[in-house]
Image 1 (cartoon, helix red, strand yellow):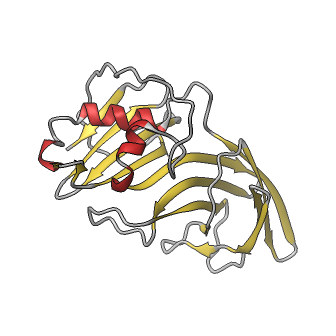
Image 2 (cartoon, rainbow, N blue to C red):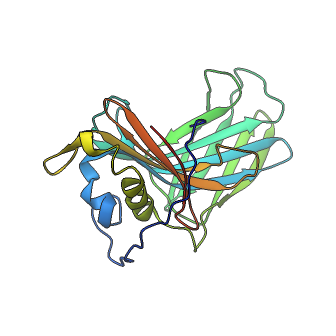
Length: 227
């Protein structure tokens, strides 16, 4: 994601759809390429306290998650990641959060690289706000996580449409009857190119080769491509 060929791109206009369709809750390109999509991550949350930085991402992804060029069966997920401002290994952080009226509790797992703790829940959310409680021994902190999504953002469907247009030539070898011979990731991610902040859509097509586009979430302009 660090090497992009940067260019100007006039995004194709998209017709707004009001009906919820299929597993992903949207139509158009997402519906058309449903069998190819290994991950749709369309919700991101952030929050912090004096001691903790917390993020959450939510959507659907294949299970088990394997970047092998073929999309498997999918499940809903929400991953909560807690990064203590003073990290210590092998701590037992408990968590509690309610999503969609269901309460989830458990113990966070330390990241293999030892800088954060996380938990994956078998649910999906697009709520505007999540309220999370973190416990460590006698310490208990409540963290309000706010969605980074805004009303004027383009949606995942338009992001995929835009990437398909930007990578039209590159994807020709992957075309097959009824679709593409690859798996697709559609992710809302934190700015990967500089320290200016913000969020972008990242759309990747993974087959024999990997092709990807980074897309402005407001304008649908393609910031860069990787091929």
